Image (cartoon, rainbow, N blue to C red):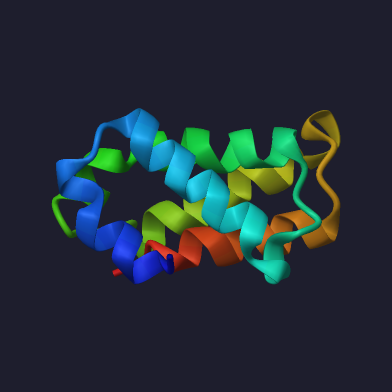
Length: 98
């Protein structure tokens, strides 16, 4: 499953099913293999906040993505995020960008 299939079926899925498929996508994609469970939860929390827009086909806007990544960058030490983790999270959020 790729991100386009996930987004196409997002409108008809519950959040739990969407979360499971997104987790599988992140786990199986070799680009994001360095993300641990905590980092995946961070991504899912951001996606959950904007799920209504994603489900309606609007995606995550550039402004929202920039604001969310800035918050992560500010709290990177508290969240124990490395620069690579931040880059991967930004790339994952970019997949939801419209």
